[in-house]
Image 1 (cartoon, one colour):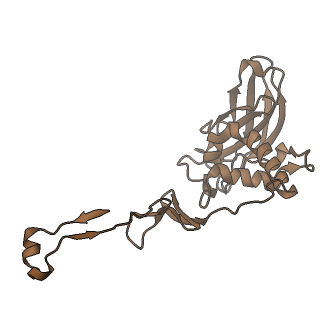
Image 2 (cartoon, one colour):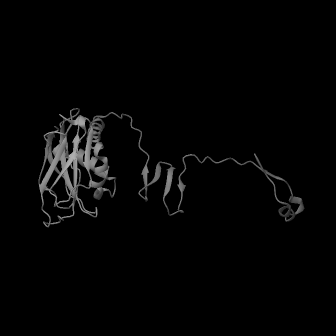
Image 3 (spheres, helix red, strand yellow):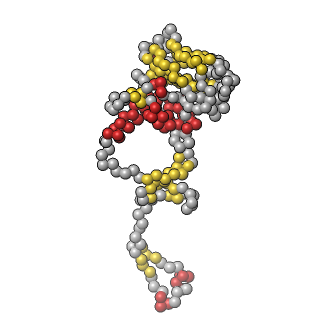
Length: 247
């Protein structure tokens, strides 16, 4: 219970027959799980309001409904999707930093990494549940309209663990420029590791080498290559260069 006292001036302004001490019972309001409006009634909000959750991503305000309670969270379609997601995540996670650049043109409604995950699940999964597998030749480390690598190849050095990339200089053809930088990646699925370069040799260099960890010797790895423009605004579709045994 709270006591509300009027000031002396306010009391004097009230006719004497009505000058009484006022007591009122105030019930505290429960503000748990309430959204907060930060920019006025027309702005976005954060938090939960009823069955709606307000949030923001990259400065974009959005709302989403609360997830429904799933009575049977292990239905066959759910198990299949989770298996595909886990398999894809294991393959792509080592090149997260590269995918942020290689897939940045597809980050309007999702992150570049999530865009790569979605594409891989839709296009590079083979087999049937529970024996799914990744088809490495269908995986793309970059995607865009820049001219791709031509006649590219990856080979292992005779020793030392290096992987050599070479390609044909097609500068001046279509959107290919002499200043384009190579995007190269070597993925080792056995160890769930990868090495990559997001600003490699120029298109006119026509070759580049990548060093791999010493403990990769004897492992079979997958090689990929793409290009990115000097200003970073354009990206080329990557090409799969096949498997290489590290020596």
